[in-house]
Image 1 (spheres, rainbow, N blue to C red):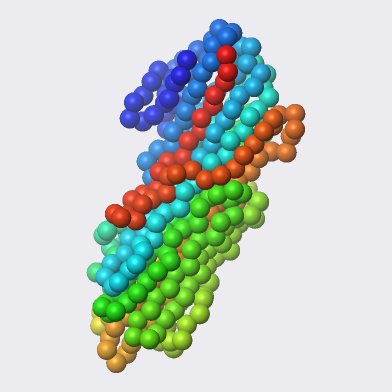
Image 2 (image 1 turned 90 degrees about the vertical axis):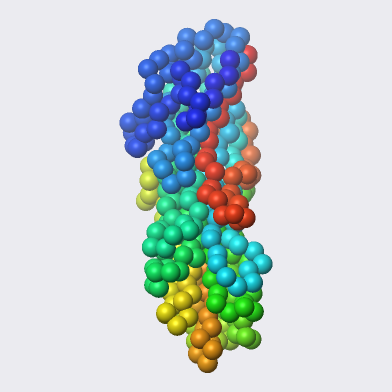
Length: 366
């Protein structure tokens, strides 16, 4: 017996989207068929997160009769890609993948598991004056701000993906952190070269930092650091200043990620990305990626702008956000095995796309 709830192909056991963890909304009869299943039947059920930037999907699952072991794969939401304009950009800011945590659990028939499947972070919008929304889940992804001045600039970083989680009743079992959003870049100088603006993957054990950024033109250059990723229950630090040999520079720093228990559904929210804007004579601006949510949230990236006053040329770049952290409960009676790695749901940078949703898949043998 295999069931895969989804928004595009709803089944009788499909979970409906809910805005709160404490009040999961499920279709009538969604749980009872599993509880009443006959012994000797195997099965799989998948809870898919919603569209990037929207509410997570939550619900419950009851262990069927005769089942004493299950395998659960949990993926955090992917980070959205940044959007860049002009200049010689060798790499736009791809979004980072969320974490993939797989656990094998010793269970008892009739136990109730609660799940939360995260959404990914949105990509940098093509229109100005709009921020990229982070994913929602167990710890929401950080948003990426819009460099709103001047209004013609729309070089924006991607938002961070949210974390996905599994609970046994009120006990937190496992969390997969979201990936960091990618950075962005903008230039009005034809010889500008901007590189390295990707987000941090939610890879094992969810501690990959966001990528830094480097902008270089007319012999002037600036390097910015990405947001660092969360470690355990501690949120990642905000991206800060790198190096520069140019005195005509403006910098802004991102926001640190939240610690475990400070964000959505007791997770940690990812940090907000930074933005920097120019003037009408040199209208360049960029924003950095937001951090991923998770057990704790990753930090948002930093942004910088440099300019040449003699020629009114300018270049700007924002770095990537860090990843949210993972979690697996320390209980050898419950946890038989566990592994941590990365999912494949980060936003692509050509063209920029939003991060893919997270998911929670539960499988049980005959």
